[in-house]
Image 1 (spheres, one colour):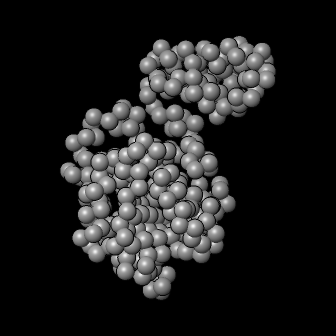
Image 2 (image 1 turned 90 degrees about the vertical axis):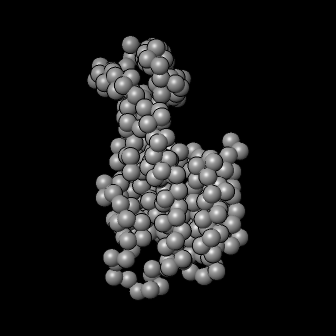
Length: 284
């Protein structure tokens, strides 16, 4: 089977199996499972694919047809132009989350200390450390398995960051640090924010394969926003800022939570689809 025939065959199988974006998935499976890039296929379409590559691709396609997320098969997801390792222990980075990173980058800050609460794969924190200058970063997560992924991503990207296991800010309270080392200029978070009753209605690839604790935001989806906002001031320098990713319909509710806690200069930022996606508040 040639490269071209293989791509067409995989695309057809995925399409017939009800997989959206079958052509894109087929191309990515060939690249990450068999090491055959789009350029290889375009420039050498008649090249015969090796037998062992065929076997690996067949196994990968069979998995994809059971609606295992593509990223769990390839083990990678691009985010902010960087490649992150992902698996079933972390939420797969979404394009919408780039809105949070982009809004922080617009501030043009350098030399600041950043705390990422519910860091997961570390994609937010590590993207900020990659694109900002002379910054220090800490990520917390309740899952030690998620932190193993984040640490792997930091090493892969050649970035220095500290990752601490614990429930939100409890992770920091167990550290023997001087007070100035427990203060940050920026706190960022993409916390669990999906209402509990909505989770069963999500796509199979999300509800059955991504970590439940990274999805469930309690009955109203706002529990983690309240908890983080309540404790964040103790860890923020004066003039420090708190950035949240939110659900498309949560911007006003999260803004009210920040306002009630005493944050000022609260702003809501929209994603490219025009939905509320990020809320920012400043602590004075």
